[in-house]
Length: 299
Image 1 (spheres, helix red, strand yellow):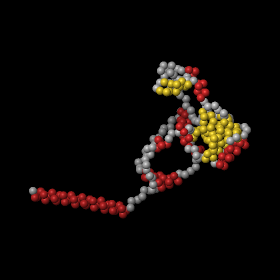
Image 2 (cartoon, helix red, strand yellow):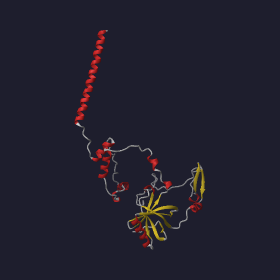
Image 3 (spheres, one colour):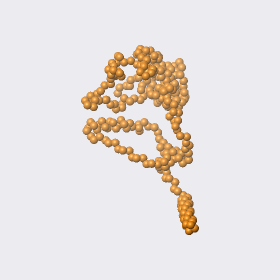
Image 4 (spheres, helix red, strand yellow):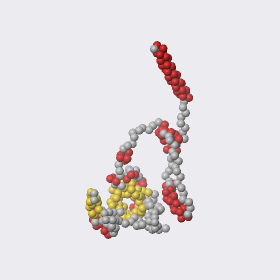
């Protein structure tokens, strides 16, 4: 098995202590099924080509340049050496700026995870930082240039080592107020809240990533295999129609709680009330008929 290749090598520095580390990708999409774009008529692969939006002529790589649009159709051109000069200088050092409680960073700021492993020397300092953070239950905030950008990295103990997660900048994280501004101002209480708590308690479990399979990847792999073998392709079944019900009824059905039976006395009283209303309407109609007859005789 080929050993993973480090994405970055440098140092972690806290206080006056520094030690070498190697950074490895913790999550990768390289194992996913990949498609090629083909010409339907010839079956040949097609290639991407950049063309001039006005002339339609192909533009070779050496003639392509970066540009920032300042208004419709007007651009500021940035040459490769100008862009390179704007990139911060890298000192290859993750300098720890502060230690913070592990749960203080909101999850929406997390970008990508990387494993930080000791690189050759410095294993004792590496273990010192790992065990010290574990005991204090803190994470480290550090900054360095990664992949041509100045990045903020959250370093945490993870198993026998350390994991570093790049963080999104504040301007990159959208405000939750916009997403939830149309949330209705409702207070849920009583039976509905109790049923919801009951359902949650019956569904409690533990997170095991092995239980969550990528059904899309499996379905595509089966589809490719079926086409290679000339088998009949699987047909997608129509999902069953959902039963119309209100929220309280849906909660009761989910919790397996039957709807409360109507009180017999209440039902009897309701029936008696309906009978009285019907008799009153009949009496009123009879009275109106008698009055009309007397009026005709008088006439």
